[in-house]
Length: 289
Ligand code: SF4
Ligand code: SF4
Image (cartoon, rainbow, N blue to C red; front, side, top):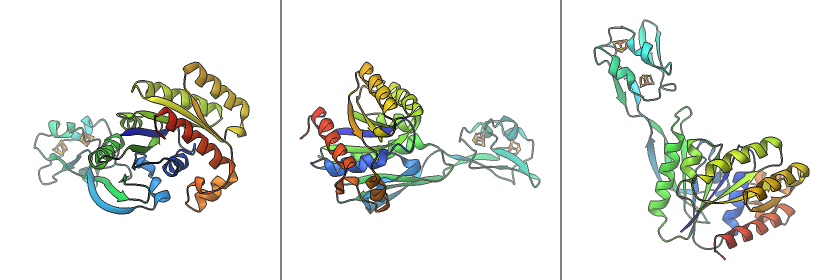
C-alpha cells in the first residue's frame, strides 16, 4: 500500500479541501486517516457512517485523596506545570494543566496523590462511499495529540487489508502530531499559500519532512493572489529539488463547494481542473494510474 499525507506549515491553507479532492480523483481501493485530530474536518466532507467507537486514554492525571492529605504543600511546590492549587482549604489538581508526570506522587509523604486513567477522546472507524476512514476526537485541553495521531494510524494499518492507497489529512504545524503523521508515509503533499509567512512555514515543514525520507511534493493554493511570492516559492522548491505539482488558482467555486460540503472536483471550475492536473502528476510519481 502506498501512503500519502497532505500537510501544511500552518492552518488555513486549504489542506482539507485538497485532501477531499484527492479522495475523489484517486482510483483503486482507498483508505483514509484524518490525522488533524484537533480539527478533524474530513468527516464533514465524507459524511461517514461510524462502525466502531473506542475510548482514547492518553496521559494519566493526578488525583488527591483528601482523607490522606496533611496539607504539607510539597505537591504544589514541586509541580512545575502549576497544576496543583490551594483553594477552599484544600489542595486539588487542575486536570487541564496536569501533564501526568507523576512527580507529585513521589513527593507526597502520605501517598495521598495517585495517578488515574482519564478518557481524553474517542477513536472512530467509519465507512464512507470512498473507502474506510479512521478519525478521532480529542477532548479540549487533553494534549497528547501526537499519541492520538499514532493511534489513528495504527487503526488504519490494522484494518486497511489489501487496499492500495492511504490518504491522510495531516495537522498543520511542525510539532508532534505532524511527526506522528509523516512517520511511515511514502510521500507528503505540502499545501502552501503565496505569502511571506506561507513561504517561511513551508521551509520549516520541508526541513522536518526531510528527516523521514519521504517524497515531497508542493501545491501552491490560490497562487494567483500573489504571483510574485508564488514565484519565490517555486524558486525555493527548484533549489531544493522539490516538484511543485499543483498551482491552484483562487476560485469562488471552492467557497461554494465548502458551503455545500461537497468536494470541489464535483464542479466544473478552474480550481477543479488544477486539482485534476495535480493528482495526475502525483499519481505518476507514485507509480499509480
Ligand atoms: S502529575 Fe505532574 S503535572 Fe500532574 S499534578 Fe502531579 S506533578 Fe503536576
Ligand atoms: S504532598 Fe500529599 S500531603 Fe502534601 S499537600 Fe500534596 S497531597 Fe497533601
